[in-house]
Length: 334
Image (cartoon, rainbow, N blue to C red; front, side, top):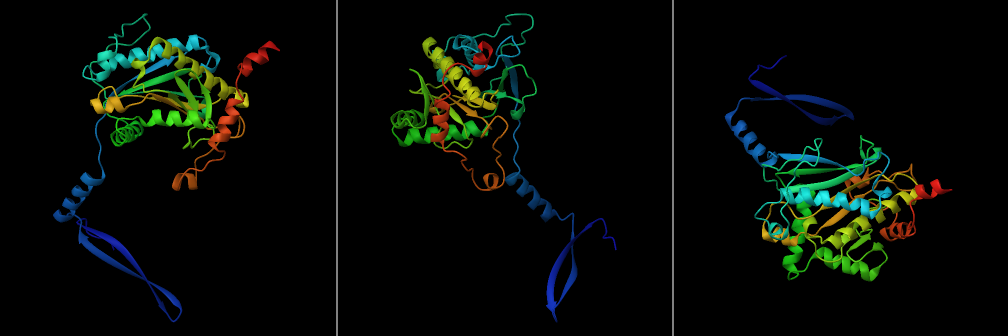
């Protein structure tokens, strides 16, 4: 029997045990589907549980080299430095005039350097800029030419927003100290998770790492964002990027896949947000035991908490041992 269009039918099943025989009883509960009270409840729940805000943005793609076969691991620090310069120019050009960073940053314009460049001065003030690279098909990279991306958005994304709130809270509670600077000093003292250090940056396997060879590239002292880097510090940044990407490739003698991203001060934010920000780079690589065996975050790790296949201390030790010339260069010279 079909219920009228103005009614909805809900089936309720109850189970009774009578003389050891299971008997199912079907009961129909009817209520008007166009009840004004029900509609008000749905509207209230929707406003409380289902929230959406419009976000606009702008994206850039930056190639690392004119040659299709050169990744960051193949480049010398002097060849990575222009990439950092472009990251900084694009970040500065999008910086809010009211940001404390704008006071110390050199004015930047994005005039096309050639007819094929499609970069222009933004007309919208964006809140955040995410610079990142997905390397390898395992990380969803569909274009084999080594490149990175920049996404600017009017909203503050979830991951950097959570980080920033924790950095702000720590700074408030610790009398103006910076969490990541304190953490960098701790890792320098303990050394067991440290992979590489130059005068400005550390590379380490963080204590909380989820991925087997996850690393964090971290300034030793407080740097808010790319425009804060002096020319010498930018060279040290290029040196650190060359070191970790080369060591990754040397580990399993393969084009080591990863997702890499820079977290830094928002383009637009309060003085407290900007001053609490701390420039750093995350590397999330999936490989576990070889160039063909990767880690999968499934089952317990998705539903409960991540599990370490190897400790960060073990991972750091293996990456420390991968120092030296890129394995591909050695193969060519044989």
